[in-house]
Length: 103
Image 1 (cartoon, one colour):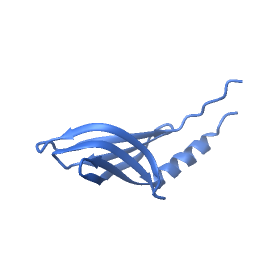
Image 2 (cartoon, one colour; image 1 turned 120 degrees about the horizontal axis):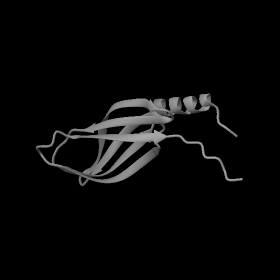
Image 3 (cartoon, one colour; image 1 turned 135 degrees about the vertical axis):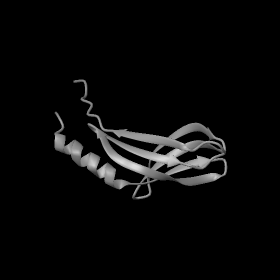
């Protein structure tokens, strides 16, 4: 079985339109990050670029949420920004891949 191209396009369109927020976790709690862009970057991949502009923090986790409030993706990290740092640009890449069973 091979999935049709339109299925990929519909799923990618759904994902692109359903991302609502990105949250980053620091020692002092959860903070909402600025979403710079949500794009269909390459075949079957949606990218979500965020910017964290606050200095003097240690980011331990970044979370991606859908419009329904459900956590879609999370990544544990160890990003440290000092007061002189301009911030950090972070990118989520969500890819869809067809995997055929070994029969």
